[in-house]
Length: 391
Ligand SMILES: Cc1cc2nc3c(=O)[nH]c(=O)nc-3n(C[C@H](O)[C@H](O)[C@H](O)COP(=O)(O)OP(=O)(O)OC[C@H]3O[C@@H](n4cnc5c(N)ncnc54)[C@H](O)[C@@H]3O)c2cc1C
View (tube, protein in one colour):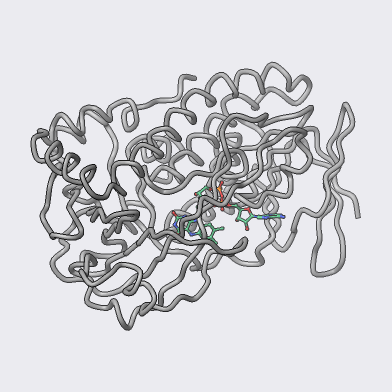
């Protein structure tokens, strides 16, 4: 069966749903397809900084997320080997007022469900689950997308296709010259369990060649723990079951996961970290890549979901009237997003370099951190958290 739609979005993840809501807000009708049959609880925590929560408010979904999220009171950086806290940046009412948006931590499923619920309720958005992109063909006027379904195959012909199908994007194969994901040689270990002593904070414990981040997700007593270590594995999904004993061996004899009571009993999952360099083309003809499909990042600046939200919103701004002539709209999108994404990717890399220091580098880092004023540290990130997409 062949259907027609003006704008097709492949991927009902964070970027795809944001793009759908932003386009609908501008009067467009869109179809969104995803391989999953039902949204799932797979995954763990993520951070929604003010640059993203501000957009969620514009889309009318922020209140729903706030009711399912935590507003941390501080961001803390500590030395995981000694347990010394080096820097504590309070998230003050004055800072939040300046940002004009909250800083939140939540389960990924909570963020996904508020976007998904809003999309389902929106008459301008048609959602088709159980539709996995299998092939994409483009001529000058249309894009033909072949989808695998439980019944066999479906075909959707659209004027534009937005590829928001994540780090292992299938749509990306139809964009000549697009960058491919590269394994970074690091693995993220994740678990959620009972907490004690962490408080409502985002805490990063830095260790040589790795770091551990803890923050509450559902309530102050439910802690999300992410440990980054060296390691490789093949292309993975979001939840490969992992062995906590192996993590303890990798982390060494010191036990930097402080405050996490459930370490031994928690269900640990791992996934290998991959990155897509933000230099290659993001579009061709009538296809645009957004989110992880365009520029997947490691999580060291906690901006993966935020970049997906910024991308989706920017796609809404640029593509709302682009069906007849997408080339200038894609150029505008590139102009809005390329420099910003590069800068955030650089910051991600810088954070890794700082957090993972060992030997004399670690000593110098700890000294410099102990001398910094927390206020100046947060103010230096105004470009990141205070960013607004120009409309
Ligand atoms: C199930 C899941 C759990 C995750 N858990 C976490 C987490 O706990 N913490 C974290 O920081 N990040 C997590 N992520 C990744 C995080 O959501 C992204 O890195 C970030 O938000 C960028 O969003 P995105 O929309 O570009 O990609 P994603 O949010 O990954 O969305 C991509 C969407 O595309 C769909 N898709 C993939 N291939 C096809 C295809 N061939 N046809 C149709 N649809 C397709 C996927 O089902 C998914 O819904 C998770 C991603 C997924 C899919």
